[in-house]
Amino acid sequence: MNAWIAIGATALGCYAVKLAGLLVPAGALERPVIRRLAALLPVALLAALTAQQTFADGRTLVLDARAAGLAAAAVVLLLRAPFLLVVAAAVVVTAGVRAMGAG
Amino acid sequence: MTDRTALEDADTGEKADRAVVRDALGVGVAVGLSGFAFGVTSAGSGLTLPQTCALSLLVFTGASQFALVGALAVGGGPFTAAAGAFFLGARNAFYGLRLSQLLVLPRAVRPFAAQWVIDETAVVALAQPTRRAARLGFFVTGLTLYLLWNLTTLLGAMGAEAIGDTGAWGLDAAGPAVFLALLAPMLKTGTERAVAGLAVLLGLGLLPVLPAGVPVLLAALAAPAVLWADGRRRRGEQEDA
Image (tube, rainbow over all chains, first blue to last red; front, side, top):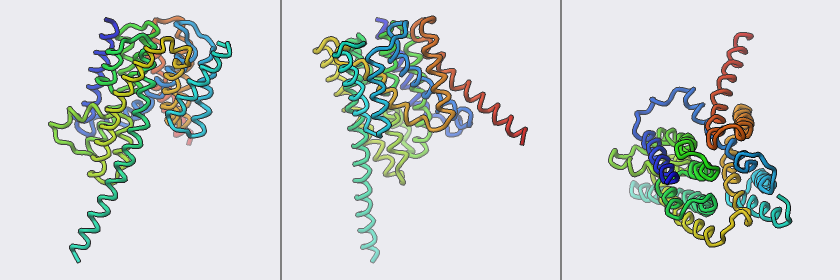
């Protein structure tokens, strides 16, 4: 039930902001500080989420195979590889490290 | 003479259309396929098949979907989890602002077009030189991405249910890898890097002491904090000069 409530709230909220952008008159959100904040918020959220989903196990911090996977993804990203290859590198390296018995 | 010019115009117009469609399909297919990663991650986080598919059909903005299932997986409350996903989706409002000026859609069409206002459609449409090309790019990218993203979500979730332990296959690393891939192109200047660094410290530092989902929301405060510090520094420099 909790999951359905979360899904409903997210769907409504995300649709509302998409529609708001198309409907509000131009200029309403054009203040520079709002634009800067809107560009920086995803940076903060994505960075925190990346870190948490790599180093957290529940509410404890751990260093396991996922860290190796993410490092591989970072290397592949630096090589300007396409999106899917980045994800694949993380998955393969994480599975490989686990198969070797570490993490 | 006029006939010939018109013919050439139509010819270059067609060529331009084809180039837009090719770009749009490229983006739509590449990103649409990553719905696999979402389906797998969502099923691995304990969501059911209908729940996973509902997210891709109704939310349809990848980062928010990943964030939501990640927050639910660690036991976050429904509204805390939804808040994180919502803040991530808020950037779409700014794409909508720029797209509405560019596409000039009829009012009746806007509620339908809205669901497709995301990173990829905005990137393709905003890169086009004319309104016609922008509309075509928006429509083809949106349609391709919506169909593929939902199809691959379904397949990914079914696949994850079939193989059982997604962790053993390293599939729990797909979520953070997607976030990193979305984040990397945003880290253009020192300001963005400072925000990311501070957000990582807040996100990890607060994790053991606060309820699930809350640390991510507080980490978002890194954005206004760095912006404020930047503004102060700039004012300071102006006074010195």
